[in-house]
Length: 325
Image (cartoon, rainbow, N blue to C red; front, top):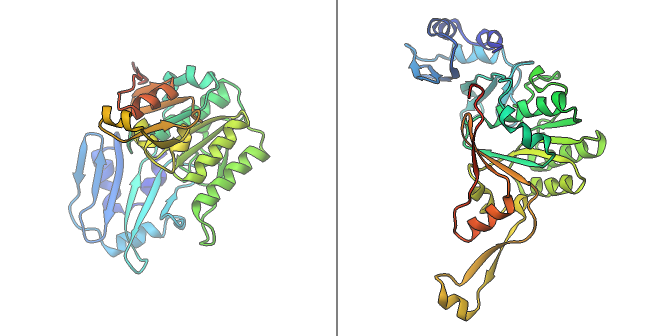
């Protein structure tokens, strides 16, 4: 169930027909830049199409999409496809990136024991490794299979898809969207406010949120954890150490402070300071997505953090969670 027909309908015939010729299996992105050749990006590699993208092509696409939000993103109603635009310095759209969204039922099946355990889980990984796909399927497992009351705070509509009705891939989970910014409040304040609404208004047992990236997000995560609500989130980082060394997000792992060493301790080592964790981590489990289907699970997060701060490697559990394993 790729829902590719609505995406293809938004593309000019000169782009749509070559896609059908080359096939849609494994298609990940369609890149259109004014005056440059169109690019189809597949799992197997890129395909460059003949001819340059014209202003008419750009206008054709623009006339078939909803307006773009403040972050220059939009989507297609009840699909998981994401479209981002590029503007010139005067605000005119001169390019698009279409990202094909595909639901993958069972993607988070290899994490079912962690989800069922009720512990808060932080997902990390490079872009394109499938974090959002895992989050979406985790929402379905928690809501449908485990019977939990799940509320998704959908930062960019990437988990539940665009439009007022969420994509069926999230199962019975409910979804709160982040309002488009109006310039009067920073996005970080808006997201934190919606997280608070999810907690206070909808009696969730689980809150799922994509893209924790600010200190205010970390504070809200601590508030959610203190209320006894299971939290499943992604954050801006590839590895546990990235979060630990990020001043805005270190609070997700208990926070870090720097202590000066005594003269005798300093002489014995190579540094005059030591970094220590301040308190218990908000997230009891951290999952690093190494590549689609392969993850590293830190089930003792405090211990992993302390080892990293001491300059020692952590010892996560490697898991193959691919559906066909």
